[in-house]
Length: 76
Image: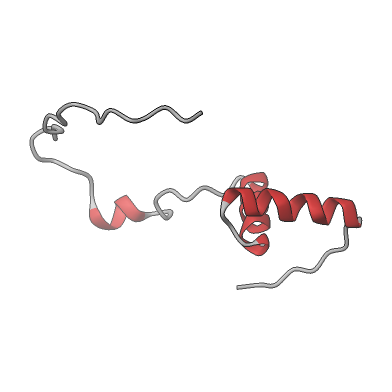
């Protein structure tokens, strides 16, 4: 994996660190996600994946009933 280096104003660096912490990510991971999103790179299936493995030809898949949702306490 490539390493990138850049310079930003101190205020911007602090803001990025706060946003990363709020997201539960390291600063490096947070910035990598921003770059990936901006570059339009998706985390979908790799190119040619379905050419290798084919597509589903069986009966339609159905999700079983999920039951009732849990009742959660309201945060104040």
